[in-house]
Amino acid sequence: MKQLIKLFLLAPLSLSLLNANSSYAGSISFRPAGTQLDGDEILDIVPNNNISFDIFLNTQEVTGSIVNLSHIVSYDITELRFRNLQNTSLQIGAPQVIDGQTNSRQFTISQSGRPGIGPGQIGIALSRISFDVLKLVNDGVSDFSIGLLGARNNLDQVVANQFNPRTQTVEVQPVPEPITILGSGTALVLGALFKRKFSKKQKNIAVQ
Ligand SMILES: [Ca+2]
Ligand SMILES: [Ca+2]
Image (cartoon, rainbow, N blue to C red; front, top):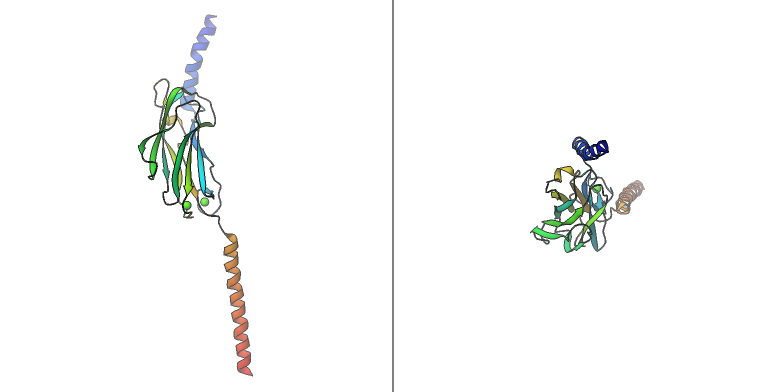
């Protein structure tokens, strides 16, 4: 029995030692993540009149339960207009804007509450951020991004460094238009052909 108790006491310790050496898999992310629609590196989304991003937390290999979490939201105010911030969390408190303004390029959201988000969980909903679409430009530059700023657990430990990746970004843009490109290409070819035929005709006329 003593042995069993010893084992029981040692197990969490060896687990936390193991965690210190392994790569952490906690992460903050949003959906839709977008897909690659063009030649620039950033993932792309073609929205309609509005778009909502759902923010999620993964806590695999994170120590303790997350009772306080903060992250930055950045967005392009020329392409998107902030509409609202909704609470979708069940395990941590409602999102509060603690720094910056929602109508500016960057603001910080904080969520706190107990018992918090325990370890080993995937896809825990945090919040939903909605925008109206103003004007879509395809310039290969981020239009919406999030970045983890701070994370504290129920043992009052700072655990933000146990999250990786801590950022995510996406571009909103209009539909890439291959038909237009093909169309203008076809017009150029036809124009060149017509020009050649026309000048040939002119030459013939000149010969006659
Ligand atoms: Ca792209
Ligand atoms: Ca854009």
